[in-house]
Length: 190
Image 1 (cartoon, rainbow, N blue to C red):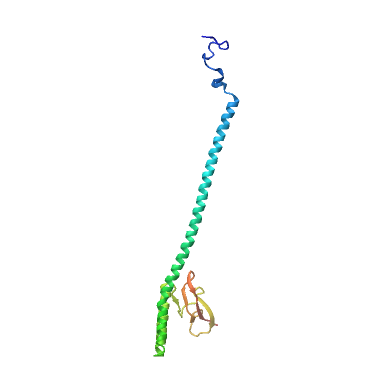
Image 2 (image 1 turned 180 degrees about the vertical axis):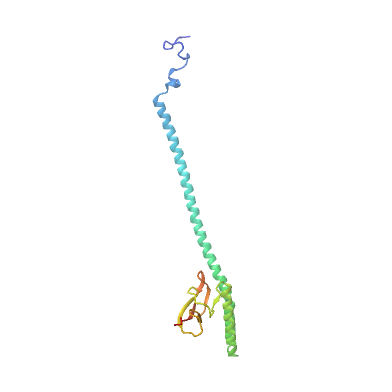
């Protein structure tokens, strides 16, 4: 067995072992290389994460756009279906007007009865759609329900009372009103 002149007893060196590979002797160059490999791996991991997040973001945007388009289509479809239901509900009113006109030649007085019946049918239809007729007199004037067309002196009527309805209103204010009733209101007595 040859003796290594650089080896001394008790320095922990074993024959056949290379001193340069000892853990204590790792060079600064090797440390820098390992750090470079770690930072390159970290950069690659971050780039992969960014790519995955960008892909998820693009998919989410596409899903949102598809949802917006589907909602617009459904909204158009629902509006068309509602328009169809309303028109279908009005068809009997039109049919009864035609019947009243057909009977006009035979008995003119029957036309008046027929037109009143059709009007009552139309008013009932509006009420069933949530727009009840508002044509009350003798009630206090309410600017949400009424549109004052004129103010008149009316003996015996309390001031601010609806005396006459010139055009009926339909619906309940403020959210479910088609139009307010046009009314004449009693003036404050002096």
